Length: 155
Image (cartoon, rainbow, N blue to C red):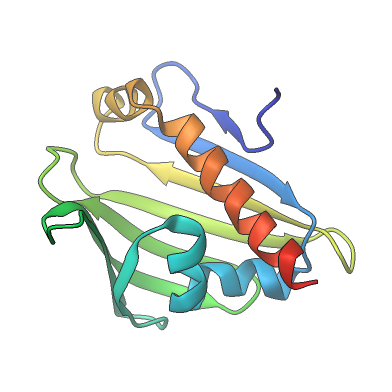
């Protein structure tokens, strides 16, 4: 089955380009990235903090049934323009991966369709390549499918 979220990683570059067209209006797609209760639903992480403004920050966490932290990620929000773009950092704690810089651009295609383009810049080509060795493409596709399904159930 073809994955709807496309990942492009050119040899020798420190970046990944991620694109996906959603059957969602732009305001819902943007809200899915900025409303804590929605982020929790499609990402499967608890949102411990989400200050959606310039110089704001966020903190996500996943724990097991015993309360042990399995995953924690945080970042700073540098710029946020509603229904247009988010510029932020992203750091997975306790993984050895350095901070990444993310540019998320939201584009309306029609009243009921929109496109997300994410450009992620890594500290080095090696860091980028190590990320791609993980089931990164499968994971982001699953999350984006969940995002789209979440809203289709509400329609």
